[in-house]
Image (cartoon, rainbow, N blue to C red):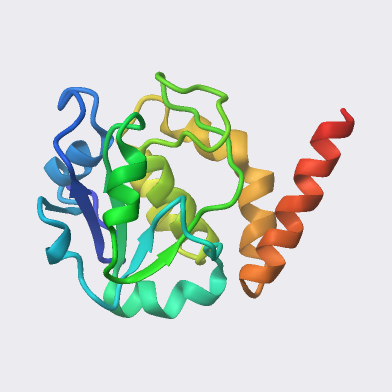
Length: 178
């Protein structure tokens, strides 16, 4: 049975990683995302997940994601800064603090795979079923949602970027006390 998502998902693929391990390419193969190889082809009105953005992704971005799509920038973490800085199209948003569950960066904060980033954004925007569908094609996919469920639900309950940043600060503060 072919899996589908309601959301329009795009992945800019910079061809900097091992295609066998690339979660973005896998999403494309499963027809869960459209692969883009040129940054200029990023839909102008879409929401672009960019960790160097000064604005946090929030439920407030839901309507734009619904109408224009969600874009993840898929590149090597070693060259990420250049790719992220070159991204000018769309509404740039950074994801809040989450832990990776992918085999390469397990339990590392913020170093999410492309699929994890897309699933996190979908969850926060209220598209939980789409997030689960995205993660269901990976052996470790359900672990990402389980590991971050409390955080994802907390961020999803926020109305806007400011609230997401406040919740993230509270989470970081409580973790530093532990």
